[in-house]
Length: 486
Image (cartoon, rainbow, N blue to C red; front, side, top):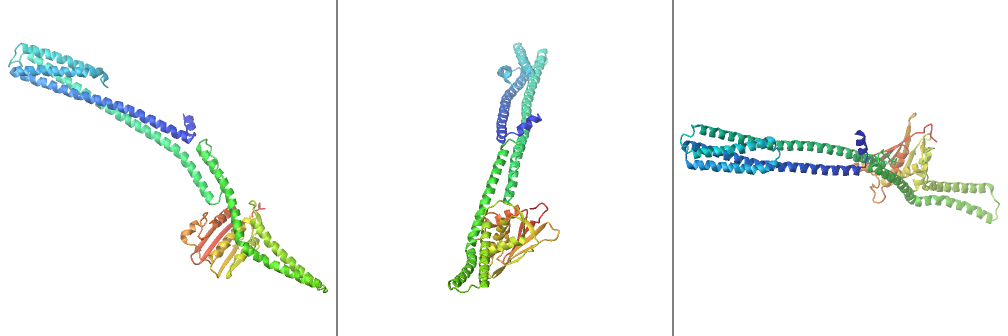
């Protein structure tokens, strides 16, 4: 039995729901049919009880006219007694054909009705013989009158028994119907609770898994859900959800790359200005050397070496700028490598320095001994997003500071990015890391969402403190190097 219930419980939810609906319809139909049958029986019993009450009234009238006749020997009392006898017999004849169709019209009921009919016929014959003898006045005292009265008492007793019998039958039907309805209600309640628990556990269990996974996705965790060990729709939903997670992760990677390209677009004009200075120096050095050669002047080895060193330095500077842009723009797989935090921060500051307006300073305080497992490219994206947001929040003059600390023996390093900008209103603090939420007139609202996801992927956390009109501080906590790190 337990195995059958287990197999049923592990079936498809739609099958369970369909079975429950069919079972409910059948159950209500059976209950309705049985209840209707009992109601018909009650209706017949009530109709019969009304006839029996009429019969009881007729018997009482017979006794009343019988007494009057025995006392006063009036002919009209004699006739009324016989008339009521005929009426009572007629009622019994009406009851008898219905007897077989009565619930409870068992042997006792039939025997009582037969006895009543026979007693009434004997009573009528006895009363008729009393009338033919012309008794008057003293009819109560002779043997025939005494026998008539005894017969009349028996009629009253028998009809009273029949009335009681009919009432018991009605109460029995009502009691049976109440008992059956109570059992049916208990059974349907039990079945409803079982199906509600079964379906609810399956559905709410699946919804709970999906809700938990959705919260993980909001936090940047795209781990697939474990497949439940069932063959119902829940497994299909989880498989579809895992497919959605894979697609979301792929789309997030695309969004990250697009955000990088957008950041590159913002930095382009400044980078062009940065490249213009070394290119001008290279051009000037080349012109000086070319003029000396064209004038056929003696070549000064020291000046030539200085010009060539200057050209080499400016070419290296330009190469570093272009290399930084290429590394930042190139899409690579996520990979943690041990790198000095100071170098990563300095490169990000270099990339964004062209966008810093006059009056805004970027200060760094990063100890050289802090080495962290980082994805260099993606962590630069974090720093660029935070610094660009800080630049947009500051009305010059202002300061953007990047500082890092790591206590000796600590398992994590703390990096803080602080600005003296406009700050964030308290009602927006809980949503700043939500995708597509932005307080700017332009922008996608993906910057801080991407930052949150990247920090989460590094195994770290990010928090924010802000006061309107005073500035904002983002605090990033990252794990230190472990023995197994690359």
